[in-house]
Image 1 (spheres, rainbow over the protein chains, first blue to last red):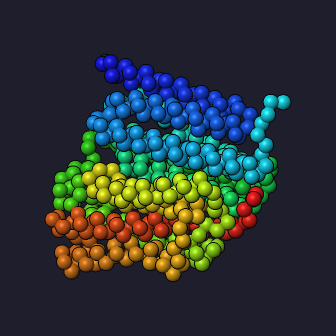
Image 2: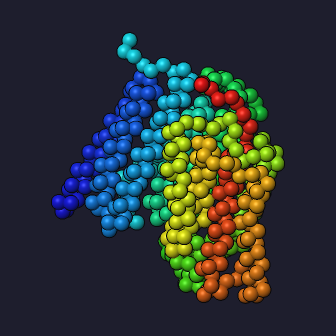
Image 3: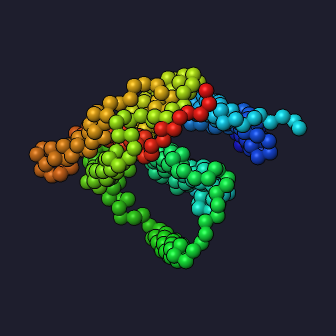
Length: 100
Length: 317
């Protein structure tokens, strides 16, 4: 196992941690807005770290760059999807949660 | 592929669990979401089985387009508000029907398990035949070679079936005058900008999948699913003018007719239906696939657009 492999493993582990945190938020947070907040942010960072990990182990720079492009596309898509869901929730009159 | 690992066991456990969840959820919205997750999980299973072509098709069509179809159908089903669905009464005929379905499914599962377990471990004859004949097909990807050259006849008829389905939906479905999404449009600056940003890239990805399908996983059908997704995105965002209704039949049937024309032309040129000369096969296949890309995208988009009539007024401002 080389130093690159170790670094990749550490990055993947850190990325998984962000995914776990995002999922925990999805399950535990009180309303749709805070759940979106947890998902769209934590998961994007988690995916970024995992993409970095796979980038280190990718055969060739071109393949690694494709992975980077995947990450960018998902950043855009999840930001837009999060916005659309939150907007629709607001339109339906769902009030943002406040500490009771 | 080397050995069965932890991830494989996780996938093998997740697929039946997700499938059961799809069947058991009373809330149809949840069932639909889980169905999409199930499709993506099955795509991962195909990846692990070294079948990336099927994985792509499953992710794009099984999870993506079918999920969109279900979501759209769901939006049109009138009924009690979400979460307040009454438990249906299990009366006698339904119990009998369900019992029969369970028995049939169990028999089918046992037969499948038996078939899988009795597969000889040696390489199947067909694999060797395809590999030996691959250089004559004009393409390097054996899946594309089988799909369009060796068994092109099957694919031709399948595209015919797809076309018939789209024509059926167009005839009896709602909104017969435009390929628009009507009241379901999600207007707004963010999705509009997103669509403007994404659409050129999606068109390139669709064309890339078609082109790369000759030598690597990909092909017209996967590309068509991406193109159909782009079509849905542009319609949801309200990007461009709709395709005029009188042009739609051309888009829908063009791919099938081109396929048929090439198939018949090969009788004149090479003396057999869909018999290609190895030297020129690649270009004929590419021509057929280009037609299929556009037509299948139009067919998939039509199925989603015209499935339901939901001209409901948009809520909110």
